[in-house]
Structures are given as structure tokens and as C-alpha cells.
Length: 454
Ligand SMILES: Nc1nc2c(ncn2[C@@H]2O[C@H](COP(=O)(O)OP(=O)(O)O)[C@@H](O)[C@H]2O)c(=O)[nH]1
Ligand SMILES: [Mg+2]
Image (tube, rainbow, N blue to C red; front, side, top):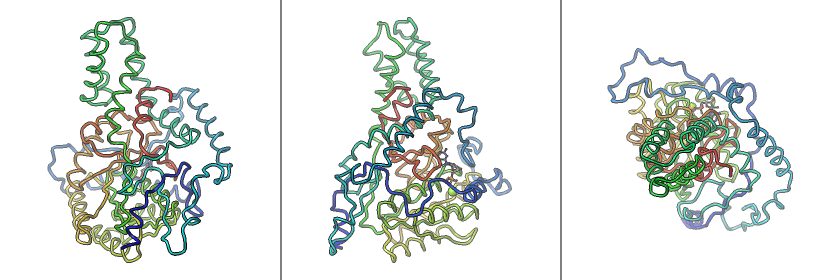
């Protein structure tokens, strides 16, 4: 007990640098791993012959990526302005040079916990950027080193380029030599809604604009700035670190979401961050529907030095979750992350399965699962809003991660989701690699959507 309290009472600091990769974790997937992961994409309509529950949301409306992300194709790349790509290449070069600086020089104030801990004290892991202990929520992480930040920010900006260039282009055209009147305000509102930002945020922008500049000359740039400020106001309250209560041993994270939204990949990235900072992590393959899904999680467990627990294809996912929780308790794991299936083609069955998982975990600890994370695919637009609605009701989602913001994302929807659901957004996925998960930051996201340099 004293040990557990020691864990939670300690005010954790956040690493400026990226967490160390797990021992032996390769930076890129091998050809075999890629093959295993691409086999994961499930053919649509697999459950067509099974009964489908009546639901207010049509099945086709709910469909999302349903499989692997579309990476930036040469066509997509041609949409990204050259200077963005060049800047990114430059930043990568800078990154490479930054990595050569010995860790002791780069962050002298942060010594590895193992060095400072005495023999009698428990080794206190330094939580990775983007996580907090339940007690330390108020302590915001320090801003990451600029070189590192710019690199991923450039990718986020490239991913949101379609949204931002369309929006800023339309706004500039609208406000070309025009005074702000009712008609321009109405047209602006339409543009913002079309960009998936949601009615609430659209109205915030037009109201602010009207109160500050009605009847005056306004440029597109003025409007974009006001838009970015209003987006920050909506996003700031949801940009929070993922609070881990390590006294639970394990803190249980259940990951839910539609197929192809990035659950398994995100679990792998989270496991890399957590085990890289010295925590004992267990991964449970609760997507028992496909062999490839189980194998994919196993690969991530191996890469991140996490313990893996799986079961037979088609076995009861709730049974596996229960067993994993018992074992993680017995082995004193710090964090247990449970993967789940996301086949919305047979929604009633999936939802019953998720409810059951939550129920059986609660038998071992009434507070478990302590975190229910939902992954959302940023390329799917409006569907994501409905997905949150559904999974929130069934599985008690209490945090979000948006993935694929590096591709051709429709990131505006995250603003609408934040305004409507007010659920914390912990991280964003900016690529398929092990390090491509970044803490969500309101200002960065708003700037990327508004196409404003930071
Ligand atoms: N570009 C990109 N691809 C991603 C990201 N996250 C996941 N993916 C890819 O999306 C596909 C589906 O991911 P997966 O984790 O299997 O989704 P799941 O079905 O929800 O478990 C895989 O090809 C992943 O590599 C991301 O942030 N960016
Ligand atoms: Mg999966």
C-alpha cells in the first residue's frame, strides 16, 4: 500500500524528449509485419447474412475506413505545397542532428529514475509526454523542444492541408473587398459548417466577428485568425493528458472503435511510450474475430517489450478480458490495455460484446475499465460524430484519440466532436510508425486547420 501511494503521490515530470524506444524495437515495420497488418483489413459485408439490429443510424452511414489507411499517395502529395514538404525535410534533418546530442546534455534536468532511486524506494517511472498521474493532472507538461515539435506539426499541417487550404481559400474569396454584413456572415457560416466544424463553432466565429467588425472592412486573414482563436477555445478544455492511476495495478485501458480506425496501432504506440518509460505493460487481444488482428497485437507486444495475452480465434472476448485482468493483477502490471473488435456490420453483437467486457472487468474492480478510449479516423468526417455517440453509450467512452491526421484528414470534425461531447482528446496519430502518436494540443490543431504558421 505504501508503495502504491508512493507511486501516486510522486509528482511526475514529463520528458521533453521522445520516450526511449523499447529495447530492440525497430523504427519501421518489417515486410512480414506489414503483410500481417495489411491482412488485418477485413472484407466488407462479412456479416451480411447475420441479423442486423435496428438502429437509427444506417449501416452505410456508419461505415468508416474499414481497413488500412490510405497513405499519402503521389496524388495527395501533389496537393501539399512544396514549401511544406521542404520544411518538413529540413526539420527531419534537424531532428536527426538533435538525436545525436547525448541525452544528458539534451535534458540535464531529467535523470533516469533508476539512477536516482535508492535501493529501498520503488523505481518511479517518468511518465511519457501526454500522460499524467491522477494526482498530477494540474501539472501541465513542458512544451516539447521546438525541433521535435515542428517535425510532427509539419505532418499534421500537411494532413490538414486539404481542410485548411479549402477553408482559407474560400474565406479570402468571400471577404475580397467586402464589408462585413449579414450576407457575408451567413456565407461564412455555411463555409465553416461545410468544413465539418459544426454549427456551434461556426456560430461562435460569426458572432465574434460580427461583434468586433460589423460594417467594417475585413480581410480573409482577419477572419482566419478569429476562427483559429475560437477553435482554440473549443479545443482547449478537451486537450488533456491521459491520467493514469498507477495505484490500481493495473490501470485498465479498454480501446474501442470502428474497424480500421487505428485501435491496434494506437495500442502499440501507447505501449511503446509506457514501457519505454519503465512501466510494466500487458496487451490483451480482445479482437478475437480475426486471426490477423490477434497476430497484429502480438507483433506490437513483441516490439514494445509488453506482455501479450491472447486466446483462440472466435473465443469469448469478455472471458479473455477477465483472464487478462486477473493475470495483470497477479503479475503486478502497471497498465493493461485491451484491444477489441470493431465490426459495425453486425452492430448488435458487437455492442453486446463490449457491454459484457465492461461488465466482467467491473467484477474484479468496480472502477474498471479505468479508461475507455475510442479511436477515430480523421479521414471519415461526419461519421466520426455518430461513432462517438454510439460507443459512448455502450462502452462508456471517456477519452478519444484521433488517428490518421497525417493523411488527407478532415480534421474539422474533431472540433465538432469536442463542442458536442466534451470528451478529453488525449493523443493524435500522425503516422503508422511507433513514435507517430503525439499529445493533443489545441493551439497546434487550430493553427493547422486555419493554415496559420506557428
Ligand atoms: N497514416 C496513418 N495510418 C494509421 C494511423 N493509425 C493507424 N493507421 C493505419 O490504419 C490501418 C488500420 O489500423 P488498425 O490499428 O489495424 O485499426 P483497427 O482495426 O481499429 O485496429 C493500419 O494500416 C494502420 O497502419 C495514423 O495515425 N496514420
Ligand atoms: Mg485491430
